[in-house]
Length: 84
Image (cartoon, rainbow, N blue to C red; front, top):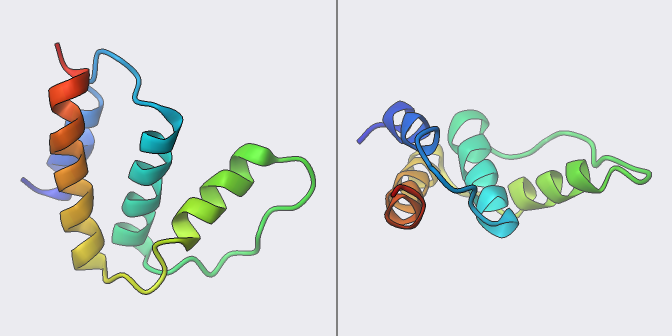
């Protein structure tokens, strides 16, 4: 399975994954496609943006290839729970 196929598979989920699962998917996808997070941390009360920033930042140092493999594995695991 490719990264693009895994992304397409997430769009077929019939139930929305939990917030921690969504953040992990987001972080691995960003790491796989862009590499380390070099953006500025959002300030103020934008809690969603801060959570996304922290999730992506937690993957720092992981290669794009490794992040891609983990993303695909996570999507395959979640598909057993969220596709009926």
